[in-house]
Length: 217
Image 1 (spheres, helix red, strand yellow):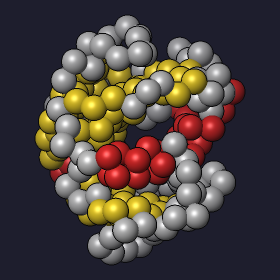
Image 2 (cartoon, rainbow, N blue to C red):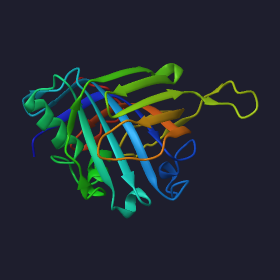
Image 3 (tube, rainbow, N blue to C red):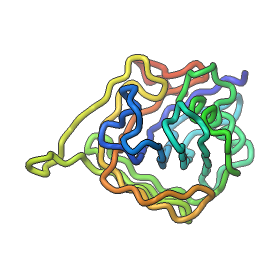
């Protein structure tokens, strides 16, 4: 396998209730799963190909729970990404060069027999993880916005975190409320409003989450 490593951040919005039942081994809130995600890579490599400063995105849809399969996915890479970098991101984000079940990308790809052609589009991402605020735009494909979960009584920002000591995506994530509008691409689903979202710092290799340290890739 080609060795790889990624340090970066993600902003995710799916159609489930705040907190996401998947994180607790529970079926999706509405019986199916659909999500949009944007990634900002601070540093990384796939073999000799550097991935520093790249942005990517993805759209997913499953007719049931993720582990039941039959899903579809589409990756998007930022304009200006070289052919070598695009191939590297496709390899990583479709679970290649990765130990079985070691990352979320391996799982998602395994559960998506339909993999649509990777697109290239301008990607804009802004994330303030400490404030749980962020937004992203994948030109012609989707717009995503995250904000703090509102307190059920006061409406003030409510902070909650999920910690996964044995997870395959992150060690810890900040919960948020998300909104997504699809504009194009091969996958379609209804707008997402006030549904589960999260921010997370990512440090992943083909062996999985690198825990307890944020070493440079």
